[in-house]
Image (cartoon, rainbow, N blue to C red; front, side):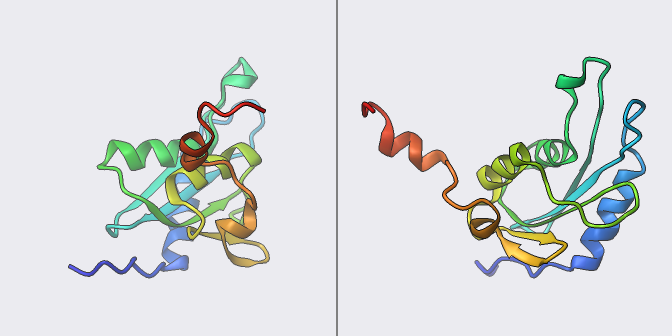
Length: 140
């Protein structure tokens, strides 16, 4: 088995995101979102947004996708795409960018309207697990 990350098939990822987007639970905003990601072992995981009458407890599609990542064996995200209700690419919100960083790291590729970009460009100077180790016990 090769240690090289699988090569993203962006069209297949977009199709998976569009498919799962149709399953979103969005009765309040009617803004359905789907996300699909390629895992380092070649699996594709997907998630859709799930709204709630208590608006603040809704879940973004990327959260569902990361939950599916861990529920199906874990691993690292290599590439992610996210689409809105019209099927066009959608940039993840700030919270979700942080979640993607945690599960894919700085090299993870994100499909954006301006082209495929590494997370290090999408979320520069990100806070990650290494910050907990290097900054633990330090005082401001």
